Amino acid sequence: MIQAIGLTSNPRKELPPAVDDVSFEARPGRVTALLGVPGAGKTTTLRLMLELQRGRGITYFRGRPLHRIAHPSREVGVLLSEVPGHPARTIRGQLGMVCAAVGVPIRRVDEVIEVVGLVSLRDERLGTLSRGMDRRLGLACALLSDPHTLVLDDPAGGLSVTEGRWLHGILRAHAAHGGTVLFSTDDPKEAARTADRVITLEGGRLVADQEAADFARTRLRPRVAVRSPHAARLGALLAKEARAAQRSVEVVREDGNRLSVYGSTCADIGETAFRHGILVHRLADETGDMGPHATLPAEGLASATVVTSALLTSASATSTSTDDASTDDAPATDEPATAVAATGAHTPDEPGPATETRARPAALPGARDLPQLPPPIAVRQAPSPLRPLRYELRRATGVGTGYLTAITVLVTSALLSVLLARIGHTPQPRLLAAWPRECPLPPAALGAGLLGALAFGEEFRHPALATDRGTVPRRLGLLAAKLLVASVTALALAVLTVGCDLEMLYLVYGRELVGVPADWLPLSASWIGLTMGCAWAGVLAAGIFRSTTAGLAAVLAVPVVVVPLVQKTLAGPSVRKAAGFSERLRELLLMQWPFGGARYIAAGARLVAQPVGGALMLSLTALLCAYLLTTLRSRVR
Image (tube, rainbow, N blue to C red; front, side, top):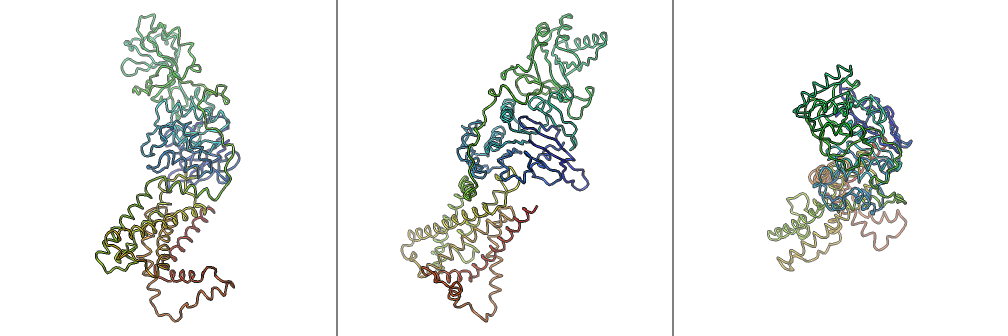
């Protein structure tokens, strides 16, 4: 059950709030429609309910506000706008990544894909999906964690009649199984035929909260659509007979040979046409939309209608058949219906089935005829520290950006090493790292920093984790997973770069340049520390500034800005030195370092004492503190 109380958005400058004191309920087992014209405040209302936008008021989902629910995605399935996924990621990869984020088994992906009809497109990339397939994928993401409540913003917008009918069937099936469904729409006819309760917004305020049957009776106006080659004559006869019988009948002349008759029936019009020998090509009951602004039948009409009876070809046939037609018994494969505009403009809808205008019951006896939902999740995985790690691995390996970056780094390093060896005057450590003196960082360090920046930058550009909370969570578990994956990636890139450079130098120049340096251990530690430090700087900076570009800029700022500052600081005269640091540290801990640990501690201290190492440590410390401060501030809010 959803209980929205006093939802009010924050006003901007001198403008009134987009949503002002909206309160309503959406009960389980029922489909609730949030109706309003574009700009009425539907999307803002949903965002306030989901705590995606700042404002006043509170929304309870089964008695708890969203920020009090430990796992919001397991309680509320959300579909807002398009699926926020990387365009190069496949459907199966996107769902698998979300599975790892919400903690459901990976087999759930196949179950949901089969239900939404994407089995044949599971390997398609998100950037190639049509509007209808994107809606299906969004619904799959919403159903993935088997939530009790579905909140959807204009789910059928831009869909064909067939796809819209299928989507609303899924929503009806979810409600029939005891779930709560709330969706927004700007089509009153869609709300009347698919929802059990209709909540109408106008100008950001609640103007009506009605059962669908009451909504259809009070805010939709029935009419009869007539098509005849003698439309003018038939209209005049109908108006004349209405005046004679003192009945309230309104005849509206449409374009061409069409009429819209309000206040009469198909039988009466058919009898009039038959008595005067007028040929009728079409005679059908329709429901004209009066829109959310209408309060009386005499006010304006919208430009679309829903046909609720079959098309007839003569007046004599209609006078005996259309009065007894019932839309509740219409099958899903009725003849296509044509829409007639009530204001004079002809705007035909897409072919669709006959549509009912009465409210559906809360518990459907024919629930077996509805689309099948994914099976419920019997056993949920317990919270595990490996969940963010699984998510990060699937995110990093789901697109080709990382592979392309690594290949580019290896090729560039190999070519640079060959060029530097040909020019000469380059020390062997720089030759193996392909690090010219003119460059602030070697290609491997830049590549590691770029991959680290992409780890958080892609989260904000394509926020797969933001479907239920709107922002990328700044959890320490997610940060630890990203730092671990970035470290492994940087280590692999550092080792592969040196190996590829050695192999290329051997192929071009022979064994002359492939000897192992005598101080290979400290050099290896410095090289690995440099690449891993750049990767960590990219991850932390992108997480703080929410941008891949900012993460890469932070990586370049270390050698360009921070290193000169450190060198300038250390360039002054030194009165004392840190000689014997490892021995004093061993005395402090009152224990012997196993396996020659004192040597490694000394090597680490020398690494930090270098300008680049000290600058990296300083930058990483500042970025980590800023990230923790941002995390604590968001939690306090």
